[in-house]
Length: 232
Image (cartoon, rainbow, N blue to C red; front, side, top):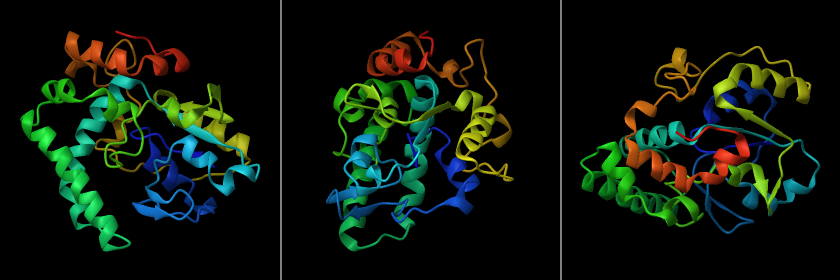
């Protein structure tokens, strides 16, 4: 069972492991019959723990990513979603209406910041990041929401996007899977997926001024500590 933190190579993992998938839930928005609310592929560990599948003894895993790159990649993804998700197929009108309302909220926030990264990040409130369930179209929660539960590591394997190929190979070995695919998905420049842009191994840090770095450091403090990423 692969848990999927937002903007942490989720689509690539899903494409590469597609031949082994036994999942019965839709990866796109849908009303989950157990949780009784709309969720998608980025379901947190707390949600997974409420499902019957969590008690079937599956090996669980998740890939995480440094908070700076996740936040900037999330900023880009929010804009992409505004262009693509209104035209997607939804399970019913109620789910579509909910998602369009969430997208409208995201658009308003981006427009208020003139679609500029640092003003947008300054406008992001704590609850948008820390609270799960309010806006399922803004799943930029701390990555440990997918790896830890009740204060303890809950998944059996944690990989890092910064070491994706080697960690993905370790995961396949742990699961006993022979995977031939090297496909990437939802990556603007696939050849740069794992290529750091600075001495810290972070790709997007150049977009962060001092105030933006402090904001990310504050919101994702536990991720830095749990996963060993260096604060800048």
